[in-house]
Length: 431
Image 1 (cartoon, helix red, strand yellow):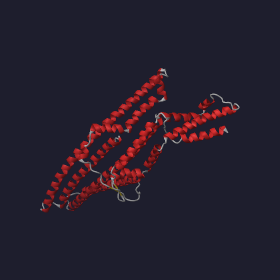
Image 2: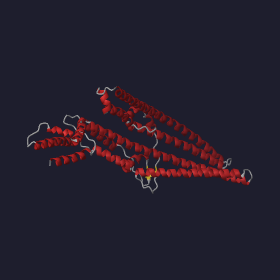
Image 3: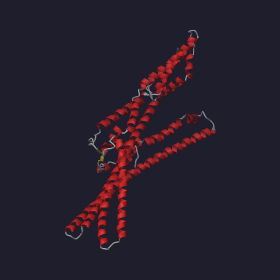
Image 4: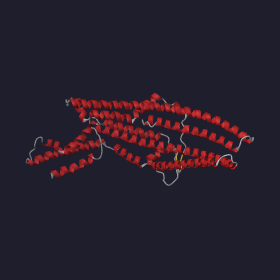
């Protein structure tokens, strides 16, 4: 009977320990603070999200950049799976787990005492409960209990939450990058269409000149071949756009067989650029960077590991072990320093790129103003009959090209500024 009771308890412990990492306090408050802080952090985050203004819902068949992240988190299956894992960790009842394990440990000890007492004709056997230390279920439960007691598992849970949330944000970054790439490719498609229209005008003029014997058949054939190659490249580009759109549709839960129109990218305002503070923003980015945290954590985990801890506690006096561990740890510290240096270098570079992209945009806008004046002059000449319709069309193409340059510069600025925002807000360097 006692063996059945212990077997049932072993099954219960297996279910308990397999349900995930947890932590609780033993009454001294050792593990209560991390759990309380975690709950406080979650509450504050939820409140901030609730207060943030939400973009207008997208019309059917459309997707705006402002709603992209929210729609991904609502519909993208990998993010939904991650969210379930996050909810699971957040739902851990550390106090319940602590009390449950303590009760279970006491039960195993008393079971061994009862077994020994029964075997000794009802007489207590001093120290019989110590036999529980040889029980694998007891050892496993005790290990979990100790981690709950000292707060280790609460910290492990918070580390895992950070990792999961970082993975979520990285997925949204990937979605935003895809959105911007599609917009850039669509703009390129429009530019190619204008190039083909211009080439058609040249072809029409060349055919007339060939009939007059001014150009050869070979020249005309070469122009036609050039047009064919450009048109073929445009079809390949459009296929790429459709493929990327399918991926984006899947990310936001849109129907794959229905068209999806992407809204314009937001503009970066002068106020946003002026608000950039390199040093202050760098400190914010460092504080929330999972990359930097993980680099530091790897060093700490190795330092606290069973092998290294023996060396640093003086339990191991073998020279090769001491040397090996210390050099390995020093190498990890140097890699951590390299990670930190690269992070700062990349952040400062990104800041400079944003500022440079802003001044490039200003220059392109000045060029458009100049080109608009040139087109106005060409239009006047056309009205006066001093230039041909093709010449006026060429002037219009030059103006369109100048406007394309502005649009490209705007996208480049937004892309770099958005990367800067991801770094400051989430510690993610994507530029």
